[in-house]
Length: 144
Image (cartoon, rainbow, N blue to C red; front, top):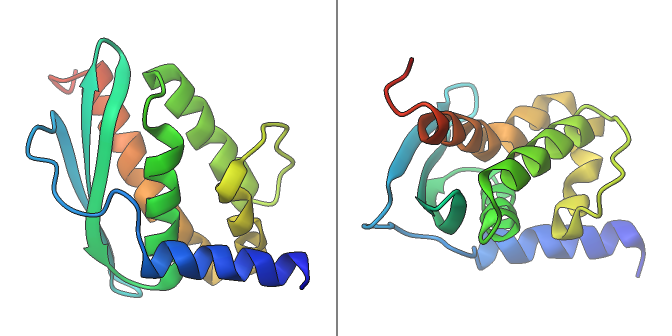
């Protein structure tokens, strides 16, 4: 089995068995995003306490890339500080634009090949756009 095959299997596993899928009633930040071009939708909810992401959950619908990316993202950021989550977000965005990333991206590395398909990059980044908006809400809750 090639690395591409392993990555495909990992993406499909996160799509078929998404981690942290559902509502998070105790969330203190929530965003809804939609990609009108392809119909992907993500609702991202975070529970942040003492500068740490205690829990992350998402719901939505869309292609395997958008849903797997959201699933992997929630796993990658849970338990991380807001600053650590921001750094992971920035590395993921760099990876999606074909730039080198020094951090061990874990399961997220399986999405690296998406960078070769520009039309799919927005799919992979949708949940991350939600994370960016959520982190901004946490840092600046009044929108100032």
